[in-house]
Amino acid sequence: MVGVTRWPRVVRVLGASHVAHVKATGRFLVVVAALAVVGCGVFDQSGWSFQLITGRAPKIEGRCFGHEQASFVLDRMYGVALEWSDGTGPVPVAWPRGYTARWVGPQIQVFDQDGVFRLETGKTYDYWSAGTIKPEDWVGVPLPAAGAYYICGAGVMDERSG
Image (cartoon, rainbow, N blue to C red):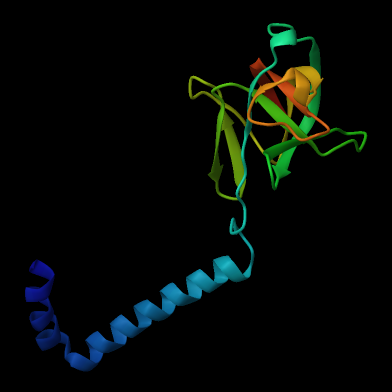
């Protein structure tokens, strides 16, 4: 209750009108800051609920054959999708079992099964993949009917550009 006992002393020193002014100004600044963030759309995740596609592909387990480069972008349903420089995409990404994702500001970051950072949406990376995987060849979080692009356990190798 330290805060309660301090208020009478502050009121006596400054006067009640000064304290009321400081409290009102503080509330005003909080409201203005909140409106600036929400109103400008700086970082609005409302309505964004995604299920990262994780699992395994028994028929191709251990066969990671494609070294490619693409932009990793936000996907409203699956969190992360790929877009290639030729305009192909976005295509949802499937990840090995144990991969996780979380919001960091307006982007999504992906981590491997050991918690190691692998990528952030909004950037272009080199990566290893096993290509498109179809639902009938997948065990895990359900894939879209058209399949998804499987990023192998080796994960993303390095960032190329922002």
